[in-house]
Amino acid sequence: MAPAKRRPLHSSGSPGSSFRSSHLNFRPTSGLQEDRGGTKPTATPSSIGLILMTMLLHICKKSLLFDPRLKVTIYCGAIFIVSLIADLAPPPKTYFARSDNIFNRYFVKWGWGWLLSVIIPWVMLTGYTIACGKRSIVVRHILRVVVATFFWYLWTKLFLHVENTYGRCLGTKDIDLQRKTHCLKAGKFWSGFDISGHTFILIYSSLILAEEGTALVGWEGINDMVVKEEHSRNVQERSASALKELTDGELEFLKRTHKGLSPYVRALFVVMTLQQLLWDVMVVSTMLYYHTMIEKFVGGILAVLTWFATYRWWFTITEGGLILPGEGIFKYNESKRTGRNRRNTINGVGPSFMGMPIRTGQREDTRNTNGNSR
Image 1: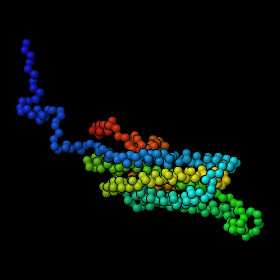
Image 2: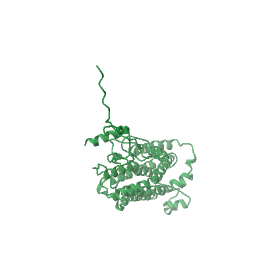
Image 3: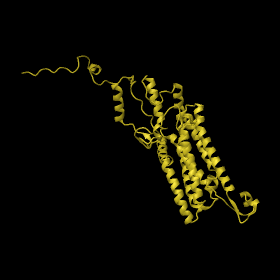
Image 4: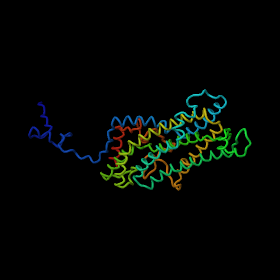
């Protein structure tokens, strides 16, 4: 029996007609790019400089954004134990034992000024961005700094009042010398309850830096949020993004401002970390060489109570008039204060490496599949 003729795969015609057949699964690409309106936007490529900066921020974040509750416990415990040991068995004198050491003279004594020099621009830049330029929200952010400065001024004046009022000039019963200034001018020694202002300002400043630094959690993810929101609006797709309530003008403002100010925000975060590390070193120095244990303990407790009363109570009250760091006209770091699903990355969303999101093909395929099935 003769074998049957095999049917041609394509219809007869010119030799090149098979390449133009509509039955082919794959066709040669034409000069015009096919419209792929439903394709999700891809992330902007990262430069080497940005990758290195992200790695540095990841390291800084481990120090500056250390859990404040655990940090408070360490502060209080160290002040009590280390100071008590130093009172009973004074440590050997070092450079830090000199009251005129460079760190004490130019940093601790001007500690609040150094804090304001970095906190004010930080609050203004981050608040201006996440508020999309709305002045009322920026002012509410700045008021946190005003409140902190008020309490710093109030407590330091109160410390001086307590020392002057409840002290006495040793070696004399002269009524005129029972004021600290008069006693010291007469060459006498004044004995009073000198609450450690250094302990207060160093611990209070460190806790403020830690709280304000939380505005960076999720900061790098804002750019991705903007890109996805723009895509949703371009294809007229219903958006579930946190930016869906923003107007087109606010979205464009956020995109432009975030891109322009992010380098300064990153640099300030590094400076804040360095300042916090210096304050911690000087806290240890104060524990070892200055004041008595009870004077340092009272100063530290007042710093912790002031921090808790403001950042953990007052600023969390909706009717309180002030807002927490990172709060604006949209949410980008909602998980930063919750105990559940705590993330130790800068973006705060999804899997990441060194704070930058990892976008795997499997996840993108899953998203596309879910989107096509709707």
